[in-house]
Each structure stands twice: as structure tokens, then as C-alpha cells.
Length: 403
Image (cartoon, rainbow, N blue to C red; front, top):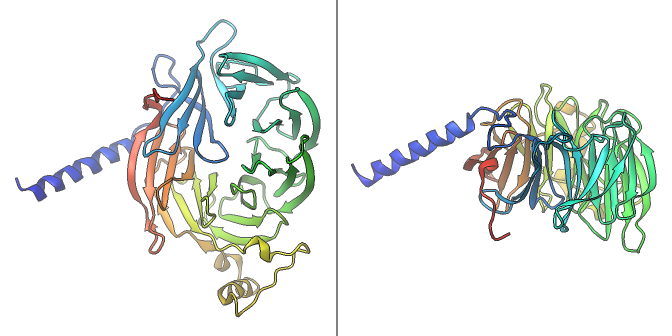
């Protein structure tokens, strides 16, 4: 057999293996198996790590490599009063401190408690306990602050003194939507507002010894309920999607101005994840349709947006931008919203996927709650179907012995 024929045969075999990996069944909870079942997972603010709460503890994965590597994990054995399941895991980067909330059919802790876990000591060092009827939906940590999310309110604590600083009401928030930007000097908190389709945006000043709120306002982002939102790493941009799942809107988080609108499709879908690229040139979106979309962002530079929220458009400086806004005033939203540049359609429908931009140019990292992992690359000029570079199961990845 010629070398060319051998290479072609090897490529076909590799494609078949990748197809089998993509078509593997979703993992189900099985306490007899060595592979855990993920109950909840999320990225840290810089997208360097993936934090997963499972039916028997938690795991931390390094997302900066070609294939995700487990950095650290903690297994909780099922006992008389605890079952090992964690529905919420939030890490205070770069420390060894975690906020843990029990979850699943056999929770490790009650769902109305936030347990403070020091992984260096291997034990809990404190807890935040609430009424038995109050289920903690999510926790976000930033410096000394802990944002504890319930279905209709968010409590803000001094994380180290266990002191309640203040609280505020939200509209129904069963998903526990809440995001904090990665900027340390002054950061942004986004949560659902008081009305359907509304987002609450708070800017915090963390330059002094005591973190304080410096501004707060509400953005009417959608007519229907907000299903997903994301902040850029610097906290300057906010992307939102409604329960309809057809449109994603990008706002200036400093003044609430709508900068761009992109369209996932025309039929309803549940948006699972939205992610900005570090340079905010691209936006990735995953949904229950089994497709990941990548959109090109053409947002106005924040310096062009005045404090009075007026947008000054100059035909000589940016004629395409003027044309776009002029057309928006004349045409229905279907024609004005921009469609995705690139797509990856080889995922399971109905499986939750998180997306992030990889370290390589124009690459997308896709993590499934079933343990599947894909790395894809898109062409920024021609777009179209993305090229799959990697496909594996990160739950079976070996722990990094050098960590």
C-alpha cells in the first residue's frame, strides 16, 4: 500500500473514531462507576479553569491546554448523613478556598447552606446557613465579597467575616443567573432585574480597603425572560439572550446602550452559554439545538459613547456603521440582526454545553455536561462549518501530577 493510501486510511479511521466519540451516550448517574456525573459546571472569570460539581465531589480542569487536564479534585464518599453530591462549586481564584452547596439526589450538604471549603486544609472552615425553604441557586466570589443567589433575591456578604452587607430583590431566577467581571480594581456585577427581560448592572469600586457600589442601573434587554447573559472579561460589554433564544444583544455595560444584535436562528431554542473572546472581536453561543455559533462583533468603542448616552456617528469615519444604524430604523429586526459567521453542528441536541475561546487563534473549546470535549477552529474570513481539532472525554482525563 502506498504512503498516500495509508495516510488516507488513517484519516478515515480517525474521522470514524471522532464520530463515535461524538455519538457516545450521555453519562448517567452511576455510583458503581469510576466516572462521576456532573451536576453543575462553570468557568472561572478568566476562562483558564473549568470547575465541575459532581455526584461525589468536585473537579478543577486546566483549559489552557490542547486537551483539558484535571488540576485538582476532591472525592466525598457517601455516608450516613451525606451523599457526596455538589450542585454549586465556586472557587475564589487564585486561592484554595471554595464555596460549596449540596446538590443531586444524594447531596453532600443541605441545599440551603453555603459551605466554605479550604482545600489546603481539606475541611470546611465555615458556613452560611439560611432558612430550610430557601435553596441556594448559585454563588459568585470576588475578593472579599460573596454573592449568594436565590430564586428571587441576592445576598451580598463579606466572605471572610461572614457578615451580610446588603441584599436586593430580583425577578424569578431559577437558574441562578449572576455574573462578575474579572477586573480587580473595579468590577461589574450583572443579575436579573425586577421586571421580566431586565438586567441589573452594578459597578463596584475595589480600590479602597472596603469594596463599595459606585453605580447601579437597569437595562431593558428583552421583552421575554432573560435566559442567559455574559460579561466580557473587562466588564465593559454585556451580552444577553431571552427565553426565545433567537437573538443575542450586546450592550455597553457602562451606560446600557445597545451596540449590536445577532441572530442564532428563527426557531425557539434554549441558550446554554455565551462567551466573549478576550479581544471582544468574537462571540460564541451554544444552545439545545446541538450547534455552537460564532459571531463577528462590530461594537462601538466605549470611548465613543458619551455619558449622556448619545451616539455620534460620522459617515466619514465609519460609513458602514452609519448604514447599519440607518437600516435598523427602516427594516424589521429579522433583516437588521446579523447571522453567525461560523458554526459547529456535531453536538448532541439537548445536552448542555459551555463554550470558551481557546489559546490558539480562532479556536473554540466546547465542554459538555456529559463529559465530552471538543476543540474547533473557525475561519475568520470565510466562516462556515468549523473544523474539529480535538475530541475526548475530560471526565476520564488523568490528574496533573505536577500541580
